Length: 277
Image 1 (cartoon, rainbow, N blue to C red):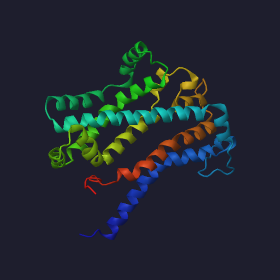
Image 2: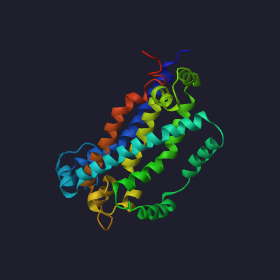
Image 3: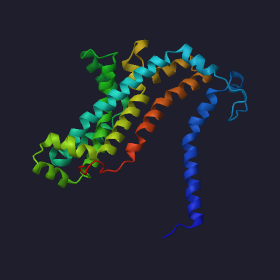
């Protein structure tokens, strides 16, 4: 049944409105980053800067170690995504292929772990990391991020794993492949979209996280980008709006680039690589 022209136009209008809604914060942030102080203080703000300037970007880069903080955040986010995927994939395989008490316990862990607020977790995490001598270190922060993102990653991969036909693994077993080889050579290629989505979730979560990084990292040279962005806010809560907007816009670029890099894999077929050449 063909869609009527009026219904199709309404669909496109709704989609356009949704895209505008999503793009508005980023466009306004970009506009603010290029405005001089006089336009920022104006009572009648405009979408397009009348006198665009790069001074806010220069000030942001000169006043705070944004490049070093961005590198720290990038390393932490990449390691978190890699470790989360490496741990969650075999766990999801066991839970999906061997249902029982373990599967039910893991599912309950996923649900319960998402119910705890950050404030209740930070004290035991701080004490544990202090005993392990991982306070004020990137490995300690990565450990926290992996533990925090693992439940959702596991839940996502278990659903993907259950959609993979068991007959493919049985055929591999007939050919003499063991569990590990079957997972690596047969199942993992079929899970490529789910693995990429899991890595993207872990990366974005680690890149944007603020609270744990603020509490666990004390040395200025080890702070992540979200923590460094707060330095543009004065002691009285007054923000240096121009440099803050410029720095915040620069902080969004790596996550956008990472998403653009992996978005083709997200839309890839579930059975890519299933057929032997």
